[in-house]
Length: 480
Ligand code: AHR
Ligand code: AHR
Ligand code: AHR
Image (cartoon, rainbow, N blue to C red; front, top):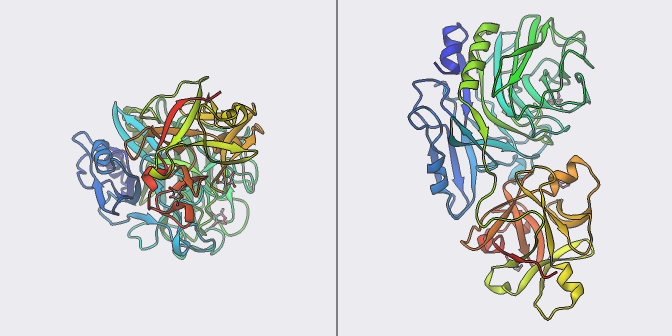
């Protein structure tokens, strides 16, 4: 039996079941998610293979030579509680009309029992929601939730959530949410250590226990694959967590509602959010692989069986890169492949990054400005960072989606902004250099200036015209 079969047997059936990686019922053969591709906006549903794991190969062939976004995460429960691009609310998103961004379809590759699948990589600004829900908990009604997340992808901004939220995208008061939170935000609650923590977003607070601030019983938890559980019923709730790749769930809190007013009774509204706060706060990041919401308060033993099923699914990491390989420690150059610009190379001029015409007869200074030392990715060691040959200690990073050369300040933000995952070039030449932290975005020259650009979007440099060529670079030997 799969997770939702287990919850049903326990008398607490799934009322929403979301996963881009696998079927959550043993009999589910419908679509897991929909992708929309950049080249022509065509859409395709990705379904499970026999055995239940997503048919990632069908995505790879549909998206070959272009980009793809995850446009729908289907509800497998039969209730139609699908997740789509989140609309604006208390806060606006970065996309057209204040919507949040959709996730890249390739930001979070994994394997399940050796079969490739893709999770939902949520960058700041990305979010999914459903306000027209069927069957989720309302008011003080009981519910349970779990999610499988990437314990190496989080931040301290509000709020990487999955679960129950307001139906109007706004903060309607204490107790109007009940969602799993994952990250190291300390504005409200926190646990022991420096995080990240599993907490419950109950609106106007992330709770790690009955005390609205610190509860040391809630541990920092950062396994590569994390199982996070939150459940609630009248004046009772719990937080549980585990390594999603082995072992069993531990209970981090089990007791009464928080000791501040507005949370007993709860005023749940029943909408479903992923990657954002209840009021569409959209500064957070994280990765979601699978999760459900139930009707009724699941027993610990039901959840323990779900955890055993998750472990048996054997989540594991896989390569984040493709195309011609890069060698750590080597000096490289990046030659543009757009017809306008095939003698131009990625170079810096103090902190600005642009393309310049460089050849063997260029000055030594320019040759060095166009040469980059390949380093292990500062933010993820499965990808790369690029250190300036003439300015050691300074790396290419994105800032406001411009590429700039900055000294490594040692911060997690810098490390992540300076980490890139090369893939086979979108136009068939060389490599396209994808941002680790914003996998919809690639090294792109536009008017000979370098950006982290997406294939269509609100910025001028996101223009779809010439995108594949502008993001494809021949990585050759460095000039110096
Ligand atoms: O409870 C934390 C956050 O506070 C909620 O997600 C959001 O709606 C509000 O800003
Ligand atoms: O480039 C996008 C973001 O802009 C970076 O992640 C951040 O450092 C800056 O605010
Ligand atoms: O960077 C040169 C050109 O500027 C790009 O090819 C084009 O997209 C933009 O107009």
